[in-house]
Amino acid sequence: MDMDNERTVAQLLEEVRAGVAEACAKAGRKPDEVEIIGVTKTHGPEVVREAWEAGIRRFGENKVQEAAWKIPECVSGPEWHLIGHLQRNKVRPALELFSVIHSVDSVRLLEQIEHVAGEGGHRPEILLEVNVSGEASKDGVRPEQVPEVIEYALGCRSITLTGLMTMAPFCPDEELARPVFAKLRGLRDQWEKDFGIGLPNLSMGMSNDYRVAVEEGATWVRLGTVLFGTRPKWKPQRGDAERWEP
Image (cartoon, rainbow, N blue to C red; front, top):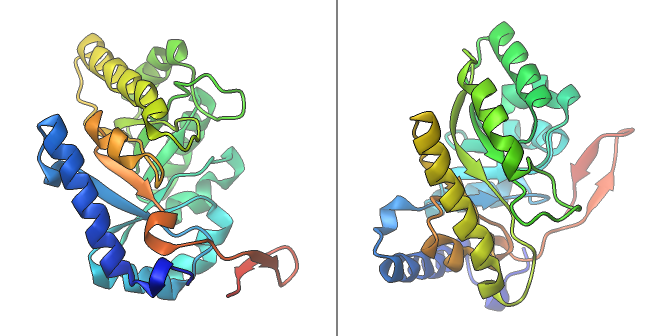
């Protein structure tokens, strides 16, 4: 694993936690209100083990196909979160692997998750991905469409809606991400009031902007390179299956 000065995950995690604590202090929050999700995309099971031993308890993967071979090879105990786009034809394997899905972006996807979860006896926790920035390149529900999706989710029996997720435009200046995070928090507060529900989880902030996200109310920050260094590359093996290679 390529890490600056060969520092361990435990050392990098300590630095990140210090950054979270500083951001919480600025915002009048407690550090234990924020959970770190270790994003292990393209990293192997040994990285997950090192992160688990360092104290990370939640891990995020972007692709169902990658998770399908990786998770069974990993240490048992982590809570696995799907943070990447979910296609409807991948819902069944996704529910076998993940207990939390951050990237629900349509009623049609909700319908499929509800159907498959009901058949399989799963009870996934879901977040709605909201395209706050309005970028065409990003997935997510447009803010004006979210109430319709919330209404549908509240009628489902096999899923639990617990919050919202967003991605800010990538920019070296993390302050430029602040308006996106602040807007999602404000929208969350409004929808909680409108529907009389709690949406406690705000999944926002990545390696380049997590401090600002925490200041604006993030409860889950999705961190990869700041903890694990540059991602390894993927190579196809065994037909169309993708496997990780160092």
